Length: 225
Ligand SMILES: Nc1ncnc2c1ncn2[C@@H]1O[C@H](COP(=O)(O)OP(=O)(O)O)[C@@H](O)[C@H]1O
Ligand SMILES: [Mg+2]
Image (cartoon, rainbow, N blue to C red; front, top):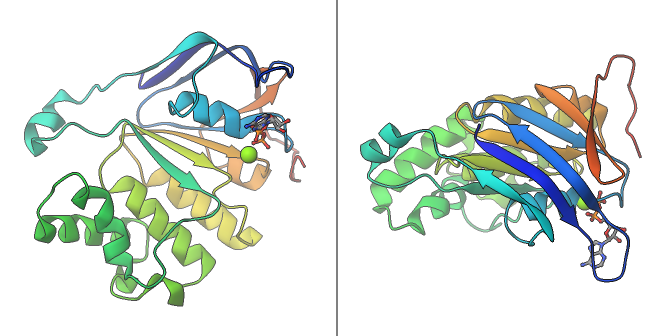
């Protein structure tokens, strides 16, 4: 398993529990969606899984099963990459610069970083936009650039928080599709209230009373909230 959580408990100060004995397992090379109406705790769950907040109970284990890969690249794979609703790209810089940043900051030489960045942009269907400033791109194109930035360093886990919330339905479905296919060696977890997005993943859970409940989306067409 690439990402496993057991018995997670979390509450903000005096408020009631957001996570209450939550278990989860996402194998490397698979994707999952967590659905819930706004305010139930999807973002909180991702923050606990990604180590941005500390659970008051339970543990999160992220395992790297790709030791051959470390040997090949000479660098360990990063544990977690984030994808957000707000893409946090640098508008005046090109797409390839925005993606290369993710590996340049780890000390990779620029020519190799740019080559990997171009390859990642191609994987997400925006290779031909590599040399355009991102402020000249559409929302859907920008989110593909942000996905390439998340992918370029080959993270073990991808945590995507409402990644398509700023996109129209057609773009949301297309971006969700490249998101679940574009990280073949990562564990991908998407928080969303959009069934169209969740339907693209290998499994879907509802976050409910602090735990995850498996659901099938047959017949569910609308956003949860
Ligand atoms: N920093 C915080 N301090 C206190 N309460 C918070 C904080 N962040 C979120 N909450 C509350 O926790 C609950 C879950 O929030 P969140 O995880 O953002 O839900 P979602 O992502 O599903 O919309 C909400 O009731 C929210 O108001
Ligand atoms: Mg949220």
